[in-house]
Length: 231
Image 1 (cartoon, rainbow, N blue to C red):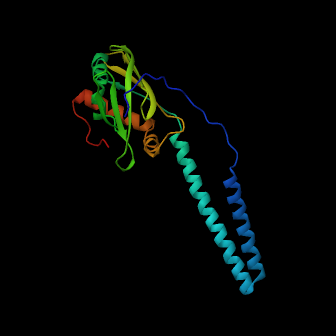
Image 2 (image 1 turned 30 degrees about the horizontal axis):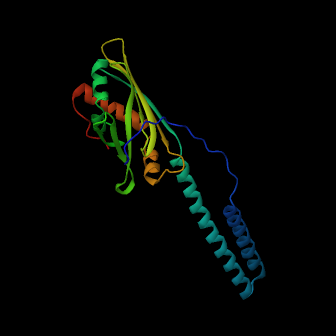
Image 3 (image 1 turned 180 degrees about the horizontal axis):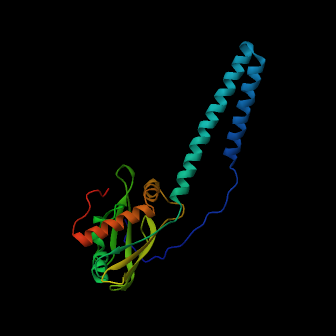
């Protein structure tokens, strides 16, 4: 991965598109196959059976191609969607302790199931590695852009990353000595270059995953033990 440079995330939206020429051709072929099979069945005899067989073959082949195209389009849609995660948890530890754990980003993979590894760099950035399919990975560099000790952390990805992302964490003291931790995470594929690894990564993260991870963090900070059920 290239050396990171500063970059602000840019939101992108895709407009509606009409049917492509290939889609029109496939639909016409499916209709033609259906009509040919119908005529063959109505005609009967050897020629009718031949026509019916040809019509069924045309329809089946066109339907398979349509299914493959639809699956690719669905995957592309997942790969290019912006994912926003937000969750919170109350932790029976003072804000300073919760902040100290989170500020040490390299420890987050201990409780974050969708992050494999985080390393600090000599330039003050952090290098994140997330899981992809078949041994692939999604990687990005991040920098802290706002740091209020014990209160708030805001970070964002840098140029050269596989995916744009930014997040913020707020540490609010509750009525006692505990902390209400509020986490916001955002992931946005780079326009037109999202690969299967990025799509796989985005497909596997949602609010329920973040909530489960924050509960693991709560258990760890309150008991000193990480739940063995983490996946």
